[in-house]
Amino acid sequence: MFKAIFDNGGGIIVIIDRKWAHYYDDPTQAASDYKEYKENGLSDDWDGHEPDLLNIGNTPYCIVMDGNDIEDAVRSYISNPDCYISYGHNEYAFIAYLANENV
Image 1 (cartoon, rainbow, N blue to C red):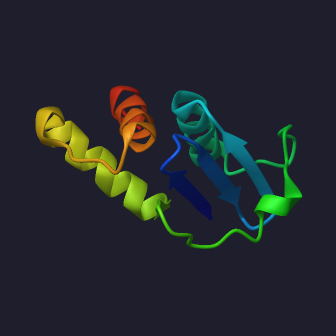
Image 2: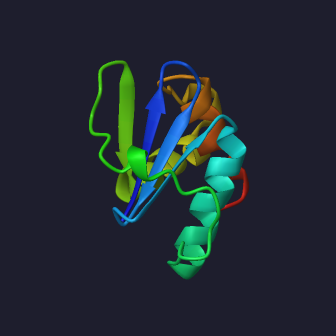
């Protein structure tokens, strides 16, 4: 299971299968990793695991998206990019990257 937490400071915390977590300050890198995870379902050999982030839950001033939420957002973006409303630049850049990659 993939979970992305978009904070209001522009960062993204990604948690995969409650076994791997990482903080990203580059939304396109987080989206690229999501794409890779979606294609092969593995994160076991990935670098950058930050175990202290595994227990982060829903926190104020952030939006949490799972794989279904991300797929819905990508479809929404593809259907009308000019009208896509996002939480912030980090979410917008993440979703736009995936939509442009046809994920």
